[in-house]
Image 1 (cartoon, rainbow, N blue to C red):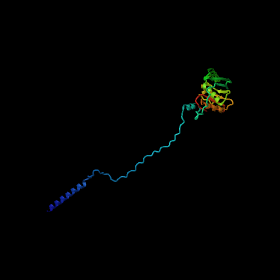
Image 2 (cartoon, rainbow, N blue to C red):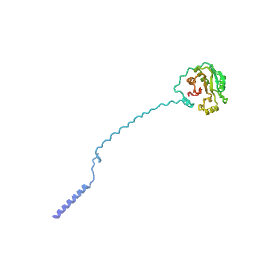
Image 3 (cartoon, rainbow, N blue to C red):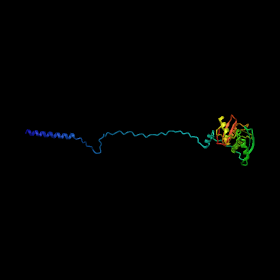
Image 4 (cartoon, one colour):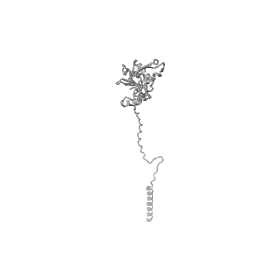
Length: 241
């Protein structure tokens, strides 16, 4: 009887141990479909990023002066083109054009009608080419007939009908190079070398009046030399100095 009781006790003890091992040794976790093992604590929504505001930079652009062939050529020859051209006068295009001139360097004088009836006179132009020569080297060139017209129209605009004093007209490259070496006011590529320029004065007429009359024509360059008492005329680009 006693041995039977011991057998029952041993059997009960072994069964409890097996049950305990099964319960504690299992690590399986049942996860419901559609759920997560992660924390279900709701996260605070991050504030929406503010849209970048691009402020338009205020850019002040200054209008650049227009660049034209006229202004470029004016710079090239040491002068400047007028920003607001003066209204040119009405030109006399029918009357004969005569000039009375004295060459200050040679002491020679000439009086000739170089244009009439709508045409230039070849013989008169030849005489003027010699009269306006480089006295230093005795070289001459074909003077631009338009230069004679500029001079004649300037005389008409000032009301001057006397003798024009010519200080300089054609210059050979040799003479011009020498003058440029001794004077800052002489351009190395002067229009005088092309037969396109003349330095003149009208006795008894203020040089500023000659300058204004020549500028109003807008037919070429006009240089103003009040200290020396003369005005430069040429048929190059329109520019003033």
